Image 1 (spheres, one colour):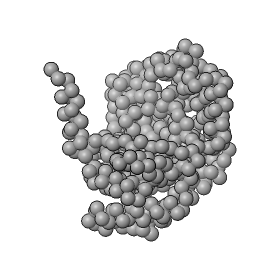
Image 2 (cartoon, helix red, strand yellow; image 1 turned 90 degrees about the horizontal axis):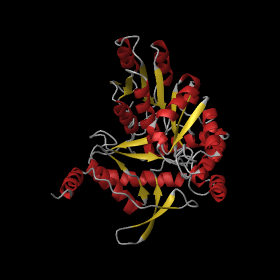
Image 3 (cartoon, one colour; image 1 turned 45 degrees about the vertical axis):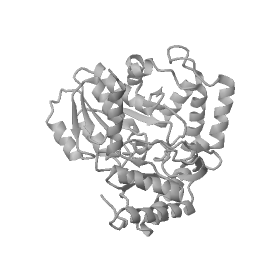
Image 4 (cartoon, one colour; image 1 turned 90 degrees about the vertical axis):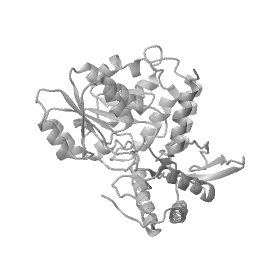
Length: 409
C-alpha cells in the first residue's frame, strides 16, 4: 500500500478548490517594519508593505522590548529547559503571570506557549472537572475554542453570533440546576465584530453561568490600561475566565488565562496541555513584561492607533474600495471566492508591493473568503494611500462589479 496517495489526494483536492495555502517567506526588518523583503519566483530580492501582521502596536520591533529580551537571554539563556513542573518555572514566569493578573484585575494567571493551547486546554479541562457542564458557544468562536469544547466531550449548544436574544432563549430552555458556561470572544478576528459583553455578563449572572471570553484580538488595544474590551466596558472582575495572547498587541509570543486562584490552580493541576508542555523561554517572558508595561502605561498609543484606523477607512472610501463596517480595528474586504482571493493577493504583491494574505476556508465558511487588512502603528498615510489605490486598481480589473465603499451592519 502506498500511503502517500492518501495525502496526495487530499492536497490535490485543496489545490483544485483554491483552498491550498501558500506561504510567503518574509525577511522581516525591525528597522523598516512594516516594510519587508522577499525573493520572487525568479530569485530576485523585492520589498513590500505588510498589511496582514497582527503586530498591531509594533511592539515586536520596539527597542526597549528587544533590549529586554537580549538582556534576559544573556542572563537566563534561550530556553526554559522543561515543563513548569520540571525546572521550567522561573522568576520571569511568575512575574509575567502576576503582571497579567493585575492587568485583568484577577487573582491569578497561567501562561501557555500560545493562546490556541490556552483555549483548548482550559475548555477541555473545565468540561472534565465539572460534571455535565454544558458549553453555550457563539457560532463564530475561534477553532481553538471549538476544539477545546469538543475535546471535553460535553454537550455544546450554539447561539447565533452576538445574538443575546437567542442566548437568553437557550438559557431559558435549560434546567436551572445544570452547570453551564457561556463561551465567546470580545473581538472576532475576521469580520471585526465586537461582542455585547455587558449584556452577556448580565445574562450569565441571571442564569448562574460561568463566563469564558477570548480577548486575543483586543488585549493591548482597548481600555484605558490596554486590558481589552472587558476593560473598556469595566467588566473584568465580572468575567470568570479571560483568555489572551502576548503575540499580537504585545508583540511577543505566548498565551494565557486570567481568573480567580481556584480556577487557575485547577487548570494548572489538571490541564494536560499545560502540564506536559515545555514552558516559554524566560527571556520571552521578560520581553512580554516590558511590552505590557509600555502598552499599559501609554493610552496615547491606543488613541493614535484607533485614529489611524479611521484614517485608513476614510482613504479606502475615497478610493471606492468596499469594506465591512465595524467598531473594531479589523478591516475586512469581502471577495467570496478562494481562487479569486488568491489571484487578487498575488497581483497586489507582485505588481504593487502590497502584502495581504487571503483568508478562506477553514478559517472562514465557504463563500466568506476575504482580504483582511490589519493596520499597525508604523503604517504611514502615504502607505495607506498606496494601498487604497492598488486595491482599487486590482479589484476593478478582476471583479466586474465596480467596488464602491459600502458598510454592512
